[in-house]
Image (cartoon, rainbow, N blue to C red; front, side, top):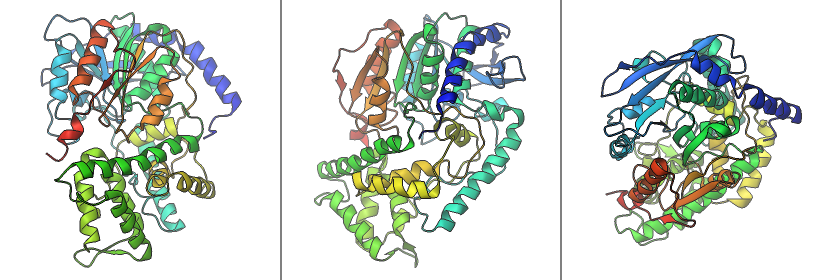
Length: 488
């Protein structure tokens, strides 16, 4: 991305050194006052600076929730399950289909040894906390640029995100410039100190690993045991190399989808090459919009938008059915079952863009990037560039903690779990992060994103690491479990 000049890198490095000890001083001045808050949880508010770059400046508070240990506690385990979004709410019982059904089992196992504690990122708290921020205008769908056909469509997408950002800035007020993972990492260290812990024991999934990467740089001397699950790569300073890993992963997923369908008699495309079926459908859409029921049509961009959503392994059965029906003359499933998600009204997207895309390519620059992505991932993966850029296109002027290589040394062993089917936080990027930490140990597994709760082999190794520090032997691999339950 080249989003940070050399001088800015020097300034950031100086901030890391000079602010490293200030988190503790602030945290020690504010005691956590726990209260019962339903579902067996105890909640508190942690007072922190709005921006840790100005630790003596205005203060805010972040919401904290605790599931007390059911057995003899070995101390606190701080968890973050990603997003960016609320993490405390995931400690509560939920019928949300996006939450892994195995999560209660995982939490039960963890509570047998730990007080399980979650801290919500700024503005992304559970509704009952009074700390959640709702913006007056929703953001554009991250799928919007995939279906964009003209420059006017791109401009309309940008306008939606700009309006959303303006409404969020008004809602957040003075806390606007604190919306970075750099600040959340300081909040984590303040929580560690408030809990009276010498070192942080932490488990992060997905976006929770971005906070962990910041923590490793800022507070290496306070790292205890850290588990990275489905790591988001915040270490690529170049936008195009970062996108390239996503494009290559998605291109490979088309083959994985094909192979899964060949093994599953219940796949709607079983008995035919699912990859070639996709190619045929794209060729038809490029000639003319695909017919759909109720007099509708599906153009190429809409086809790709639905397929990007459906390429998540959990949705492979829906994708196979949508392709088969479209080949048979009705592409409506790409507008219904695989319809793109709508934009949210939270500040989660703003935080993500502050961290990953504080500076964006121009429209013309991206056309060159996309052309090169088409060269390496021509069948499917090239479209991922539009999806990722669509998250942030039109936003500007937020806080900034730009991606950069990790500067980490002298930390205890860190455990990474990387899924071979993970196309959410792609496995190429995950390995790239782990390789920059000399003490990292990678545990590969055969499932996809966020499989900690759903893979029993993974749970066993991670539990051993968090409780005793024992690492799996080099080269250990957990077999797939979750993918075998997809569609059943």
